[in-house]
Length: 384
Image 1: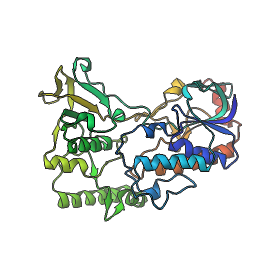
Image 2: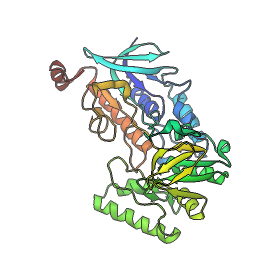
Image 3: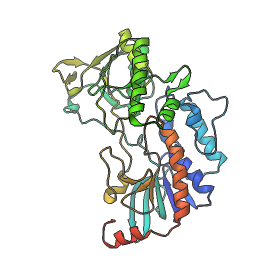
Image 4: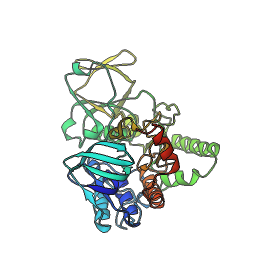
């Protein structure tokens, strides 16, 4: 089946892109691996609440309802996604799990499980990161007699009440899950190897994201000074930091938002340990050589960009994202774009809205013709 454009993924990135293509009259289809749009969001933990305010978390063309709370819940957001698809009559095809995406002779071929095979002139990868959880390669995992799951598999605390639970990681999922487990009666330890940069979710009722958007316009040294002042104010209000500061890297710009984890640590309901060196039959051995028994281990070890279906046709950077020209266009392949692959303190959903608009403009402006650059490099064999 031929399509002008194929959008892969029917989460917020895919739906926003579809709306932008549709309003420009661009023929396309959106492929979703699950039984309904927003499959990934539908299967995240029940208590999840957005860290970003609703005013900067909506997709192009449709604000959140006035009745939606400032920080929408997972249920709020799922309802919003379904209403978004209904409002703009988006062409979503479910049960279409993409296996491979290949380019030959100027045409993209998409092979799916259950959704048939398609050809297209343009591909938009709106797969984001949550569909590709990263499992930390901790040695001796098969020796452990307890349960091991990634945070993406966690739903609610009931099954862990009264059990000894180790949460590996200090990101936002780790912080929220660990705090929820402790409140539900689990004996929780958090393994933190590289530290965490903690910021409040809001200041005087205003989401910290809104401030991040404003200060992002300032020079880097001014941004750092403001961030340091916020950190000092937090210490005055809540006491000294209980987690080490992480090293600064290009891949870890999103901080731990909110004080749920650090408050539980200060209250003594969550313990902090070093990084995990290996599993043991009864639990784990930490980097300092100490052994502790655990019933359950939850790996809140993050995610990687879901670009595996493209195989070796693209390069990836040090953070695992496709190498791009600007924010959204592949640096390796013509007519290949990425939405939902920019993450920073200004908010992933805000970036999705911005990038979807940009992709819509680029595709509408480019047509199906390749640029002279892409033709030249395809002839030379650079593009696979």
